[in-house]
Image 1 (cartoon, helix red, strand yellow):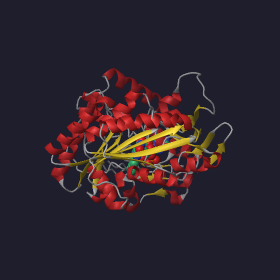
Image 2 (image 1 turned 90 degrees about the vertical axis):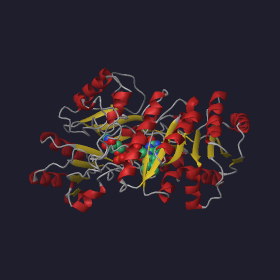
Image 3 (image 1 turned 90 degrees about the horizontal axis):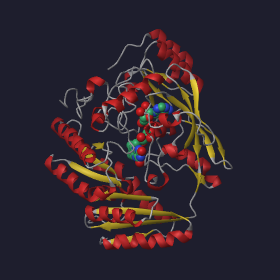
Image 4 (image 1 turned 180 degrees about the vertical axis):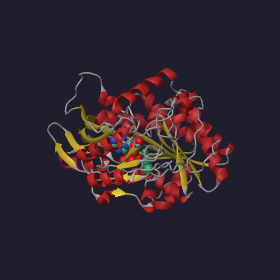
Length: 482
Ligand SMILES: Cc1cc2nc3c(=O)[nH]c(=O)nc-3n(C[C@H](O)[C@H](O)[C@H](O)COP(=O)(O)OP(=O)(O)OC[C@H]3O[C@@H](n4cnc5c(N)ncnc54)[C@H](O)[C@@H]3O)c2cc1C
């Protein structure tokens, strides 16, 4: 849905950020019409690329005065349509604000502009043997602003927590252009936890421009294991057994046979193409404790009849093991041009049975579904492969996706582990939240954003689309989902 932004306003925007940082040609706008959720596309009217908090504040003040919708955007790697400009208006792209402002090895904090990539923060802290723990697989591209807005996780979330556990303070531009500071440089417990409210709010209550991040020391020792199994269920059971044993690995990640073969086709790493599942377990911490943990893990793997087990002997071998997981999503592009990556969460104990249920859904809808799991914390990423121009297939993709999410909720899980709600799951919010809870979210949104210009129509369903649980308009295909 595009709106008409008056040319006088466009001129003012060009005055704020500089002529070449306002994009308006059809070709330029097409680059920003979606994020990683390519099922849904909507063109912005203008793309604006500020380079400072002051410029963001001036853009927001102008948008507020003229009631122009604004969707903040980092690298656009989001997977729930959070940066897609469903209401038209301005796509506010923060990637020019990519400076690491300071790294303090004594207080162990980094202050960064939000357009800095996740990986660049750890690179800057590397010389002090420190790093930023949240590690989404998109970390070489995704921005700190996007990570904060989505409360992103990653393979090591299992032990180290989500982004929210590693952000100490934020500079935020409100919808009317006012600049506020949330949190600080040290832990504080004064007043309401507005920092906590902002992290994970998906761009709906303001624009983060600067972040104070916690850095942590690298572990003394790291052990990384790769094991193959004859069934996904056996690998899932091994994960449950490790958790039940009391060992808390830094990461437990799993991919299925289809994904193993896609990675092998792409990178020729010598992976076992016959295996049904590949499981990576990483342990870290003090050297002495790891030896004992390694024995426990080996016992759980053995009980579940792993076909083979390899432990990395050095950093090179560790990197090779991780390559099998971190390149998995991209490698699936060899099988089909489009992929719909789901993000359900289930109780860990239900891993094996859920894997079987997803296989049945795949069969029933005659769809290819690859499986990539943050298995340790029950976060599933079934990846439905399709071609966008096959209308019948797209219909089945939507139905199967919804069925998988409903399955997760039914067995005690939830709609999203880390990719957020965005536009993708907004109608399904009623399946996990009561109307009273949703109303509380609306109040919070309204107090930060009274004109409803910040990423409106995302995350929180309006009362009119409550009750249509699961149905969502599909922007690329118009009325297809009905
Ligand atoms: C290959 C691949 C692997 C991935 N792996 C993971 C993973 O392991 N874990 C995980 O959690 N996610 C993962 N993701 C999803 C995605 O990378 C994350 O959600 C990431 O944090 C998005 O960052 P971004 O800079 O691309 O944000 P965008 O996609 O541009 O935006 C995401 C959301 O943040 C908002 N936003 C962006 N910047 C700001 C800001 N400064 N202030 C306020 N709101 C803002 C946007 O409006 C939008 O709602 C993956 C994606 C891909 C494509």
